[in-house]
Structure formats: C-alpha cells, structure tokens
View 1 (cartoon, rainbow, N blue to C red):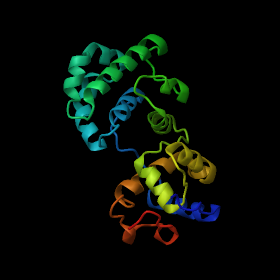
View 2: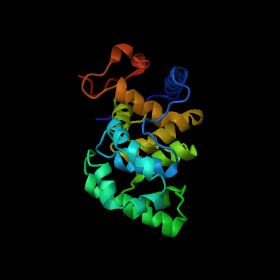
View 3: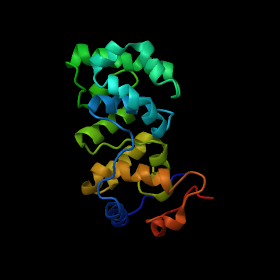
View 4: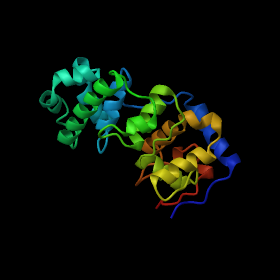
Length: 214
C-alpha cells in the first residue's frame, strides 16, 4: 500500500537536500547525441546501464546516426548487443525506428512525446528519458527505482508508474522538476534499495514513511 502523501514543505526540503548533494545529477547511459541516447534507453529495458554501455561503446563508434545504423545492418547490430537481454527483438526495433527516423523525420530524433512513442520499442518511460536528458524537459521517467522511492517515502505515491509520474509533476516544486527523475532514480539505485535500504546514510531518513521497509 502506498505511503501517505508528504506535505509540500517536506518535499521541498527533501529536494533542497538532493540539490545540495548533487546540483546537476546525470544519467548513467553513455551517449553522444539524441539518437544514441534514444537507442541506449531503448536497449536498457530489463538490462543494466553498465551492461548497455559496454555494448554500445563499440556500436556507437560505427553507428551514431539512423542512416549509419541502417548501413550497419540488423545482423551486425545483433552481434554488437548480444550481451543485452532480449537483444534480437531490440535489434529489430532499433532498425525499424532508424528507418522511420530517416524516412519521416529527416534523420533527426523528434522532440515530442507522441512522436517518440510512435517509434518501435519506445514507450512512455523511454520517451520521457530522452525528453529530459536531451532537451531538458521536466519529464518524469518512472522506473522501478523511482516507483519504489516515491511510494516508500511518500514523495509521490501512486498505484502504477503513470500515477507516480503525475504525482511527481503535481507535488514536486517546479524548480526541482527538471532533475527530479535523476535524483530519485540515483537515490533508489544506491541508497533506498529494494531489499536492504541504506537508511543510515539516507539524507531524507528523518522524513521517510518507511513503507515497505522490513
């Protein structure tokens, strides 16, 4: 059951602490442009950022645009990403979205959520990551880490990822919206972990509702 929604003043204090600790949080997927970011995020589903980076380092050296990806071909792409889960299906989607980007968008990655979500293998979370990291939009990409932290703490409780996304947009002060998703995901990845949360080093421990903590 989700925790009770924290009051505005408490949320503001929490994000002030996040900001003081890490003023400019960064995503951990390596990329050089909007296309490589889009591909990296699409490949990261059910995979670790570290594992994706290991595969995409050599890949992006030879295919960092939609046209270069098409020139590389699906078989070669598959060989590059073989270590990533669901690699065959992901390779097909990357080739399909590369073709669409070349044919319909002049080889450029579109900057609207609807256009991004129309691409094969690109869901709302992937679109939000690209919008946030590349164009600086205050888009909230809710993954398992953010969903856990938002509900466990009461920062933005919700029954599903869309509800949590909306709760972040509704309750987190505007000045913290751009980086909110990164602060929360990094906090969930390294401090507020699923099984053994590191409450002893948590900067918001005194405010946490501790829902779901054994």
